[in-house]
Image (cartoon, rainbow, N blue to C red; front, top):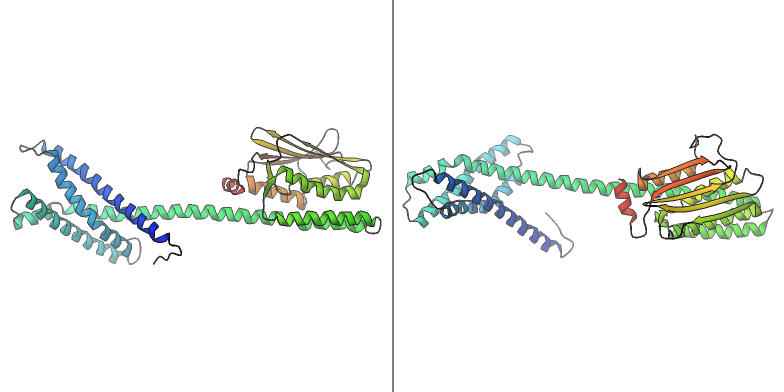
Length: 380
């Protein structure tokens, strides 16, 4: 039993029934036309030829009767499924029903044709008419039954694909939310450690850091469910974090931005630059005695968007492209990029010839007109 919570349910169901009725009638009509052509070609080899219109009338009349009986056949196919237990009982019911289908169809068609043509129908001719096409009508019955199962299996398969895509998209969204949530306690822990170190040394600087931290957390909570933001907004988030670090390092930290014109609306993962900048500050600038410089760059190369965070710190411990062990921030960034873009992304860390480390990301370029949901479906 189907229950509809909206008034649109009944019209949609009625429309679907009308469409199904027209499909059934159209298929039977096509069979009638094809059979009439076959009957007409067969009559050309006989002494008494018949016009094609006569053959068409005979076959269309028969297929119309079969079309009227089709709803009963479809109901029997759903009620007594041959692919469900008890198999033998259901098969025997359909064998009996196919015989009744033949008898009913021919019992209606034969007297009707003879009456219209003005011929007298005898009992012998009536029985011969039924026996002559018994196998043909039985095959038609089973074709209808099997065709109904094929259509049902296709609908189940298509529904399964849609459900699978929806579940995969929901799983990807849940994974993204989890990965993004890892950044908040990680960043908050490091920021509070910095503030605690300044509480007694420079109370005014600690107050400024607390104010910037509260503002950054407020914005991150506001956009907690958003996975992609315009690059301009991401730069604003990054500036709030860097203000906290500038307070700590004072004149030792210089930040430069090299953003290509026209990229303000380019979509990037929310808070993706902050972990990279944090790595540059803590593992690069923090271990350096002199003045530290961090350069954030963004450029477009065709359908690709390139983001990089570069520092002049001590560099990686080895010359490997990636470190052997990554922290929470960097591993979270990799996980988010992989979930959002699949293989259509890259994140590479490398030592620079002049010293320092560069973290470079390559993403598919898109603007606010491209939804995150579409990107997730493509990745799945």
